[in-house]
Image 1 (spheres, rainbow, N blue to C red):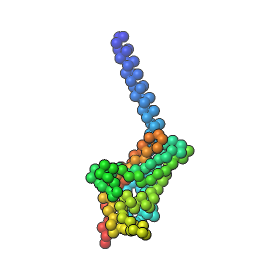
Image 2: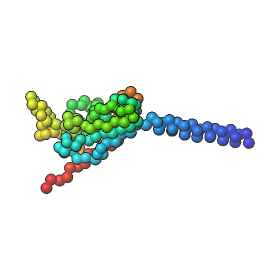
Image 3: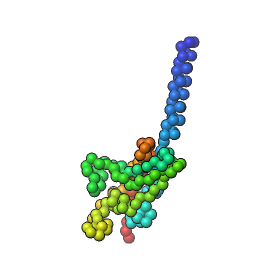
Image 4: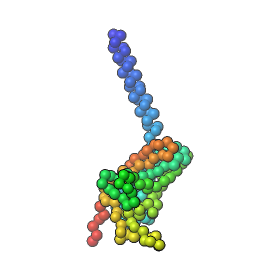
Length: 162
């Protein structure tokens, strides 16, 4: 009987520990939403850019939003061992939330991978090497807390031209 009471106490303590740590972990969570979460790479993205919204960060915390490159995907200007690029930077508000749209320069550099004409510094779409269709992981990391929110952006195959 004594053994079964100890076993029950140990099991109860383990369950309490698991539930308590899960409650602590929930308060440490950060979220990230990509709007829209599916898109075709087209010039329309310059007028209606991909936007990122997140929550769970510290008040006024700097949040860095990065594209994580899948194995085998290369981006101009990155070395072989670099696998992420910064898409946007924001500050969380007093409520720990943020919302930021990609700039046109980020969209042109990272999604379209355009070249830039010398002197005029205008995008040269003829030399562009757009990211291939597929699913891309996006991370938003708090600069002070280290909290990370994750989401996926799917680049779709463009519709056939008629």
